[in-house]
Length: 284
Image 1 (spheres, helix red, strand yellow):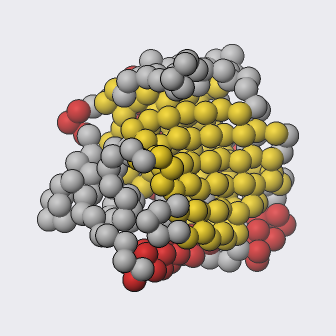
Image 2: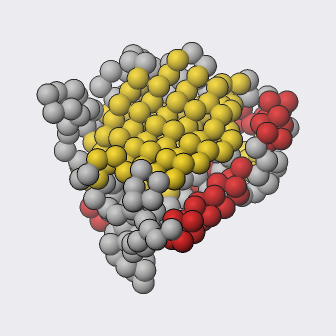
């Protein structure tokens, strides 16, 4: 079972082709119980809720970025897709650091009233201001390793096209948590990323130690994205515009759903369902 807390670890990225590239950097995340945000923040001096601090959490950094309950927004996505979300809801994300944040991916773990994990919402953001939530059901909530799959709906990297299947993996072993994401195209594995972390108590002392270990991590993530893009371009990787083209505006947030994955002879199956076709991201 995943528990709230501070998760300290690293992120590894590996690109297989046409340019081979691997890099890794230190990072930390928070896993927050969205029903206990006020209680969590009130016990800390170095982290605040909806106001500036060394570390802070703003609900508008997620979903559609508008006012309103973040928990209710994610629960609505889950229930619209047919998954119960009336129990605990946990969010794995990076907080704002000195007021700045960019989360390439945040993960919501939705539970039912019996505290059984029913769905995972993979919230992916790009550097162009777009955000897409992939709502995927959990077939076996007691499994140590959870595997999920969906079709790419949001243009993220200018060096990776849209004909991609995402393969997600969550490994839970005690206080250790690993989250893997792999991009597969028609030729197989294209790129993979793995976030590995160990849970620590969510205390001021632990937060300060995490900050010293990985200072200004959110700015570092943004800088790393653009630096790696430049390196790929210099090595000859082809730049790809999103399906809508540079001049087209896009919705800030869209969502799609996937049934709970079930193993079969051909692997994970399940047709994608768009929650609201009018809000489907055009894909920049």
